[in-house]
Image (cartoon, rainbow, N blue to C red; front, side):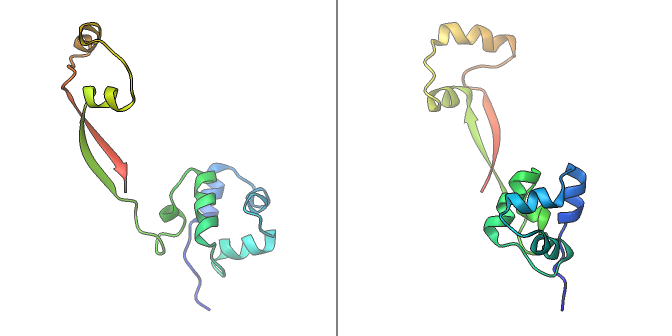
Length: 116
């Protein structure tokens, strides 16, 4: 039987979690979770996602061969666009001096990245 490569054990150790604690949170028996760590079984997508959230990592970090690296999309956004998007009411006369202290303007571009 071919073992499924994963980084579960390394990630658990680096975060200081106990295996039985995580198994309980994933609604799994300890023995079943142990089989996943050993590569004899795999976690389904839902449990992999839940484990990734608990460990503060990505699904790719857990199963590098199973899930692709998360992609980042870059987009441009001005400070004015951001303030308008979040619905913050502001007066340009009030905000421009504060932005000027940071060497910014309402039309300064913010470089943003997002998953997906």
